Length: 386
Ligand SMILES: *Cc1c(COP(=O)(O)O)cnc(C)c1O
Image 1 (cartoon, rainbow, N blue to C red):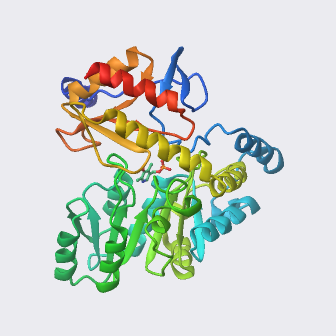
Image 2 (cartoon, rainbow, N blue to C red; image 1 turned 90 degrees about the vertical axis):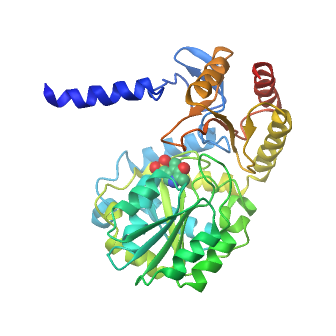
């Protein structure tokens, strides 16, 4: 079939460039000690930053939630799929993040698709996005007809020039709070100041900060001392530090009301199973009471940084659980990941197009479920391979 030729050729090209992707099958729940295709591994590859993904109390809440509320929600939120646990979860998320209201989504990808195209739909609007923003934010911008401006990573002077030159009806600044492949923070205070000065919305994707950063794990805005504000729209995911799945958007009463009327990825999709909301309520409790988990994670981060100083690869400066070790070449990054794998250590090699060409890396992902001994084992293995 001629249709198949192009697909085969493109896959062959990816293979030549060392970009073939494959699934690794886990035979155990998510956690540092994972059975992967029958082999026991020490994993530094998930986004389960607080070690909640297989937490017994959350798992129990999920099971109880299913027994009480059934398996599925049966419809979209605005049809008949908005069950009491969804409502309570949305209220708790709003209270926890300090915003007036929140909407929940089945995934962060869908949550991001809801926000930017709704706030900036038309040709006379403009979107200002960090060049390293997550793919879902980039895809969201593609759903809008607005003019697109990508500014160099965290370059506030460049953003200021773009904002000053724009005569758009509505301006929307969009940023990851913690960049998913670099682990660094956006300068949220400066971004907010620019948003105020140029009367722009500020959309913050806190997929990797929620639960981890800030007092009680309230997230990156709280970490930077920025209180909720009518021009800020916060997105957080619930499948990473929160350990379950789904996402939320928190904002003012007006913005949330508007999104509920306009956002197609909210309106035209089935609400998540209600048991997930029940599990997430337990997760939120554990996050709020999770200072010991966050302190342990911070200690592991310091241990890793000290252990990897002076190696031929550069650890990007990151205060978060995402610790990227830059290798550079695609094949070299893969080879290093394979060498670790051979020793029972699972660290993901991240290559283009996920990261810019020439910056292939190991994305070492730490979790409060790791022990000091786990990190020491990874450090020793990398030192020996250097
Ligand atoms: C993971 C991630 C998302 C998507 O969230 P899902 O719930 O996994 O769909 C969005 N933004 C960022 C920055 C992410 O890292």
